[in-house]
Image (cartoon, rainbow, N blue to C red; front, side, top):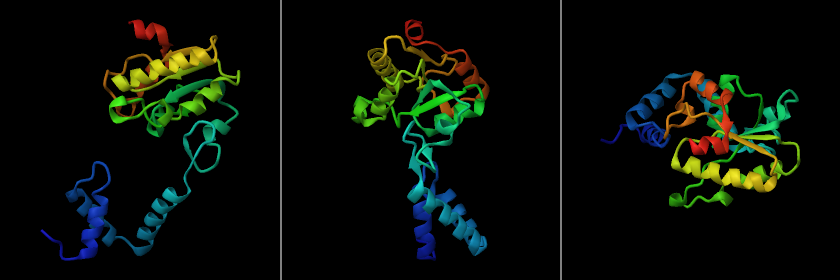
Length: 207
């Protein structure tokens, strides 16, 4: 039924567009905003607006950043010869929380999915292959979802990595993660062990 305030209705409609937010939850959030002090609501709105207008993508790894180069890529203490390839920023956060990986990352921005019309050229694969040809990288860790699309992407990247540098080591995280699972939903202990016990890509595929 229509609400008593069109302004409230508009706010609920917009909040309900967020993933995982139904209209009942959107209503609670909107009413909570009304109970807050004006400066709190303005601070919230400014943070969302600044995120949308000013967030950048790292020119090296394609991770989100406040600067042209993200803090991970700019950190001299990271192992620069080791790259972990992930689907998106949530996977970087998940792996970083394990504190088991000390190398760099490369965010693909998705996985190959012919059914959805997503091919290699729609991802950040060109930037990755450019990094693999500079002679500084010795190992690439494929930390992609254990799904058909993730495996297709891993197969493609393994082949392209061999073309870029035949001596390059390509490994993938151990499949302690259930097939069909997403990294963001895996507990930190399992994910950390998967990173630490990674195996060569070819060996993992043959199992």
